[in-house]
Length: 120
Image (cartoon, rainbow, N blue to C red; front, side, top):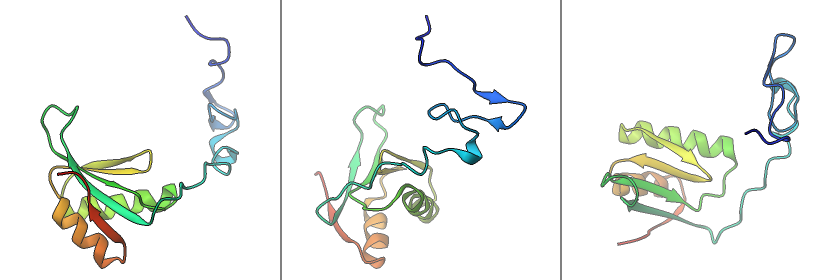
């Protein structure tokens, strides 16, 4: 069953794709302007390796970057290219497929970030 508030116009031949939150055309979306502020951290970037919930596959996580969404996506792209691997940016965390902690830490230190290794 559908909830009453979750439905609505998704695509219009008049203006193209519509934003599901503000119901405006994507080009005139007001949600992007009111994006949440970047969370303030302690100034340290934490790089860790994790396998939990991924079927035993190692993933390198980069947390604590105080960047907006566009800059974080750009840095994620640079790190994926450097490591020659896939990955994504989810909820302010850069995920790189594979164990690339050392290489990622070197790159972030060269960029001027205060980097620490998190986890074991």
